[in-house]
Length: 383
Image (tube, rainbow, N blue to C red; front, side):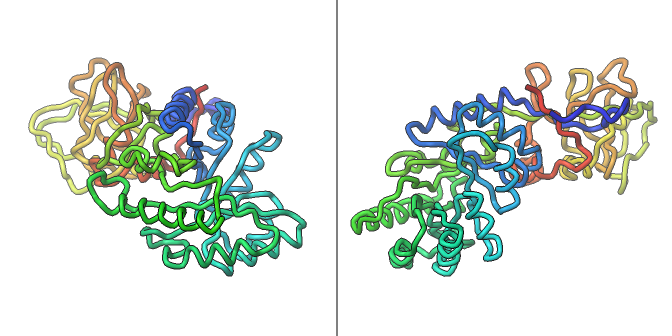
């Protein structure tokens, strides 16, 4: 757990991570998709929030499968989870030739995106006298990485003949799963299933079959049922969703972003606020300047549109958000003073502001909001 101060000096901006809520979210997801297994995606340092605390809490809750994007993330996760039995760490994207030997030695589950890559993994496994576990990554419509659907069977036949490989899995990814009415994802799932069936008829069967990430779990329930054996979840662990889709999972927000009031002033009518003078006070107002800006993760899109909580009340952001500070109308808040707590997003009594709310204003999704929290924002784990 990260210390909350440096000596006697507290950080101005902190994000609090509610680990109990995180675990509850994992348990709800696992219950929703059972008997399928759940792989928790903790790439990019758990979206910048600190992979160590996340991995430990989820492992303690029973998660045995974790996904990352690249080798350094895999090695960090292996280090964090060292000494725990039966835990898999899997790279979900790609692996480069010079990265393969170390990944094989460490027992990381690797993707196979083409025959050349598979041959390198096989050779590294033979040299290390190990068996490398691999999952075939099929491109059924994402257009980013993987084996094209038309080449899938031929590629799998050739790769399975290579020595020292355990071809335990087959998976794909959906580019449109956030849109429940778009037919593309249903076609993609059918295509993936047809490849798995055809492979089975040739005796190629897999214990790990997965296509659903968070969006598909919510919007395409057929992706979380047999013949699939596993789902992947990342953003739903945080209690967030894509703004366009369904919210089948009953998960709760995990994060609270806080800062403090820097100054409070009574300003006369006609005063303009911030860069570009985008807000002009129509009447006298009490305005607080808070110690957080876009360097801390507050989107510019909140300018003159967003809110924060001060003194238990929603207070409108007035004027353009700057790098380090934001101005807020606190006329409705009695006795507000420098040093008072500000909740940028999180729960305040029965009300709440979420990363999803910010994402809607910015025209993006919660991943973008969470990954944009700045480096000077202190991550504090609440257990």
